[in-house]
Length: 391
Ligand SMILES: [Zn+2]
Image 1 (cartoon, rainbow, N blue to C red):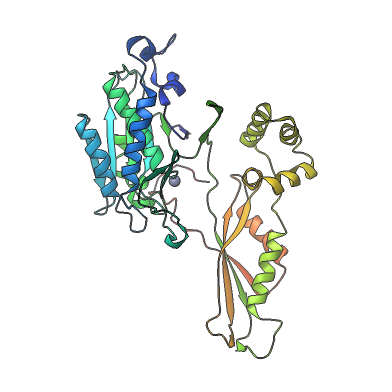
Image 2: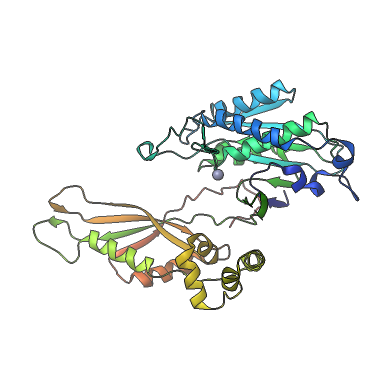
């Protein structure tokens, strides 16, 4: 894949990517040669599929993605579309199906991962595995990440197949396992062992998004890359002692102080080629007050305003550092010798991570507090001789 595109909500994918699916030059072939899909019916059908798909528990760990893969496979089989399931580990299936094109162009790959993250069940007001549709909303773990994309890809395949759309390129659909932190059974396995099944010129995967306003598509977001995690641990050291006597070197206090200092130090804001283009385009479809902000990002006051009102946009502008876990202490009456926190750190793609860590240590400014790397070292492990780069 020389380009990785990510567009969410692939229905309707056909009008979105005529250049990718269609023929060379002039009108895309499918517009002349086949009827337009009934997108309203396709949407209804996709919602039914998604509701059923959400009822299949594929929380990773352990994943059990094969169950989800078999569900998707059963739909494809009913329509006469062959598919295969590949497992590195029993139960961790990856599904691949293909609609043939003329071969004039290299294939297009549409992806959606089967596994989902865990749930804090007591916080849910509906069954996270109930596939509930209520007041026009579909509820369930995986409804946005990422079973909706899987079903949109599936539905796209069904439409291409049913309408016998002439294609210049094969369209491959993959529902993969292990996206939530166990890539070795999912995309890594497929790339290393079954590349021939998924080799494509373009891939459409999760990460972008579309928004509607007054029934019209307002935004289509395309992901150019992803900020990867470079998680770190903050470890505060002190002297274990009885809790009846306050001590300034209590590691719980040191840890708290360190985290507050880091929170008060947002990493420097920096635009890159992609975010610069994004904000300038966003300005063209935003109300005047917001457009002013997006076109004056060199002004620190503007950046501060964005930071306070839209953390998601702010996160595009800088490396982010977010505490996610704190651990320390084991008895009510005892000061522990250590306390630690996990930071989810999402560096900008060009971030110098060792230099960042050095700066963070300076911000913490406490010799009894360590900052150590804790990202998964083999997350982007590649076989010897591989030349692929990772961020
Ligand atoms: Zn996802």
